[in-house]
Length: 358
Ligand code: NCD
Image (cartoon, rainbow, N blue to C red; front, side, top):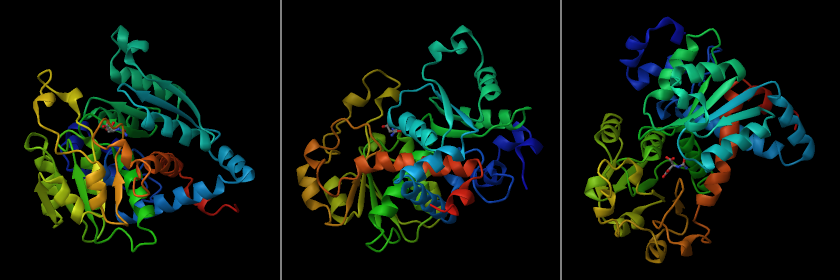
């Protein structure tokens, strides 16, 4: 069993994501992650187990007795939500997931209200949280911070798991889990996710949800990925390199209507202008052709689906909102269930919940 306590940071950080995976898994050997940092930690088997557990939690929670049972499962655990970047859905759905399982929570949503503002290092802040909590769910504008903290914590005298709720422009693994859960549910009675075409559109360069979801989709058989974006915001090379290595079919283009016609799922994203290096740089890019409206909806297959990690601006017209193929509202709620499944699994309660009498 590879352990983070047996490898120095220098050596660990030089490994590929695939090589890092065993170091981040639970020691109990059930394959579930201990620290959840990136999408490369999930293979198809794990995805299916998490989706099954999310469905199970969803079902159990329907009755009052079931909900009370769930509330007791992790009543002995506390979680810290440490979000130093704006968030609505990811914060609230993790919070709601914790509440479903009876976990007590604390939160910092603005570094200006914590001692970081007084000059405390992030390492010291995280070490402080670990004195009071049993898990840290964190979002940060800094790409590698969650990973560094995971290593630090595993090598401290109070090791606790870290869940990455968005790391810079890099990864957003739990968003990708809820996207996959939504796709699996959407195609459940329609032949499944294998063989589908997924079209990504918008800011594919800086959207971390795109990198994580693109990877998770490679776990399915023969799923084609199509990337539609203005040239300046096209999908980065590292994402394409993975697709090439795994022999995944992909296409890069600029014609959203052509993409929609062949799509089984369209994944729209917001222009991530908070990352602009020069003020107003994104506003100079012509994004008018990368918006989904009534014309695109008319081209979408009858059993296709339209996704968005949200928040949206104007890249999906509100006239699409009540179409049965619009999945973005369901995505939000699915996020709560799949995050509850991940948190329960992180603490080793997958089997307990799967096998309970409810
Ligand atoms: C996304 C994010 O934070 O990366 N939001 C989310 O978590 N649902 C997408 C975005 O901000 O555009």
